[in-house]
Image 1: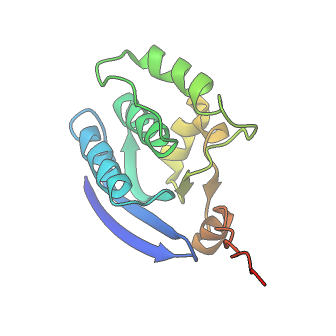
Image 2: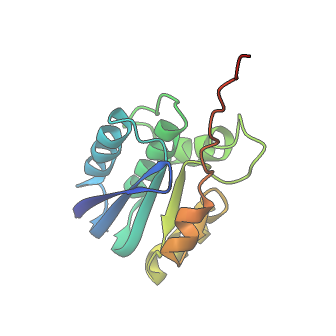
Amino acid sequence: MIITITKIENPAPIAILHLDGTLDGGNYESLIGEAQKVYAAGERDLLLDLGKLTFISSAGLGALHQVALLFQGNKHPKPDESWAAYRWAAYRSIDRLHTRHTQEHVKLLSPTKEVREVLDMIGFSSLFEIFTDLNQALASFRQAVPAYATRLP
């Protein structure tokens, strides 16, 4: 899998990871590693462009889960946890601290038909907002509220 990164100011910064190829047990750690680098650089909103992702395995779904937890500021599960644990953790932890039903800081763009079917089957399409239009996806991130300085007389 090839991962390229684009950064956009919207006015707050948004990182876009473009995934090309397959996301599986042989490379899922690449996605987690790239997301960790982006997060460490101060980015707090992430769009995963899945338009060229042709296949996603359970390990790839686990990576999506770990990335979502990372961008919530939570410690991600250990990589050797079972798939059942990932699925259960996804349902419990992604929304645990929020009233929203979908992930607030990680969103998905244009998954291929095959990937979308897997996301739907496993229930991840209810945890992540999925967009087919880049501008709509970018606009969906919460805009930064400007801080107003208090004026003293």
